[in-house]
Amino acid sequence: MGGAVSAGEDNDDLIDNLKEAQYIRTESVEQAFRAIDRGDYYLEGYRDNAYKDLAWKHGNIHLSAPCIYSEVMEALKLQPGLSFLNLGSGTGYLSTMVGLILGPFGINHGIELHSDVVEYAKEKLESFIKYSDSFDKFEFCEPAFVVGNCLEIASDSHQYDRIYCGAGVQKDHENYMKILLKVGGILVMPIEDQLTQILRTGQNTWESKNILAVSFAPLVQPNRNDNGKHDTVGLPPCAVRNLQDLARIYIRRTLRNFINEEMKTKGITQKAPPKRKRRRCRRRRINTYVFVGNQLIPQPLDSEEDEKMEDDNKEEEDKDHSEALKPEEPPRNLLREKIMSLPLPESLKAYLTYYREK
Picture 1 (spheres, rainbow, N blue to C red):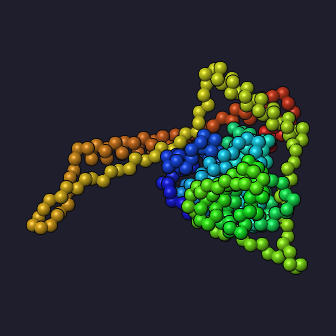
Picture 2 (cartoon, rainbow, N blue to C red):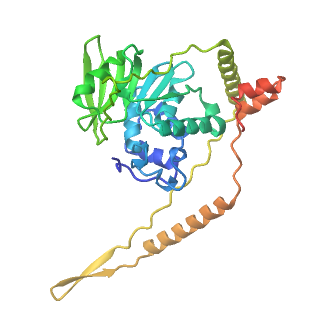
Picture 3 (cartoon, rainbow, N blue to C red):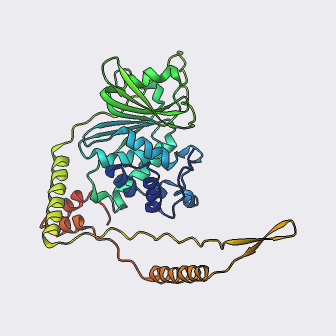
């Protein structure tokens, strides 16, 4: 599924295309998509396909097309502090983007059928926290993943404000999914080849809206144990943050606000990382047609405008090449710089930076 928008050269280029096609419509969703590089969730050797609007699968690892994730993120109407459940959380790509919007006081849970995929998601999450330049620019709700079949969730599990299911839901499982949702909450899932948004308006009332025609693999039916019963899966607990963690959140928030105010006072704007320029496509030369007997014969028509276009393209390519040869300065992490300049023990500085290595 996918192919609705043009392929991009990099993550920013892909997001530009999704915005242009109206799949990304809000600033918070755009920021989340730009902060998480889709290519980072591909296996080595497959990254060239990361910025195409296509789904990708290798073994148990799967990513939906970018246009699908865009519609899902918009339909969920995410806000800071909400609880989110990802049914079929996969690589953790979507859950990580969601965590950037939920912030530190949200809840971000995922359940995935395959244990190897959960390990892969945890590795990608750890890599994002340790190495991504985006981590210090947001307040993050870290996802927690468990292994299990989402059709075997324990009946006494807590409910969520927002839920997404990444597999095709059969009609007889629709009510099961709805019960996991809080009143006022939003559930997005594919039902009968339609990506559907469901709003729970009351204890026994829902409103549904079709978003997009899709094609998803169906949910895997649970196996029965030796007693003929299904094993139940426990979701992660909704733990309250401890005082140490709360202190770190508020110290980082205070420092980030201080940096922003300081830059505003000095009239300094932090430069965004440079975006790669799109190449200008060379236009085909226009053919003129002449009759020879009863046949219409095309003849190329060279014009000064065509020659000028080719000269402009060549100059632009030469300029892009020379700029590419210049070494790029790594973006400054002002929050980290501020933390490291504080008169604090090194162990406390490491804690405040989440033990990040840059």
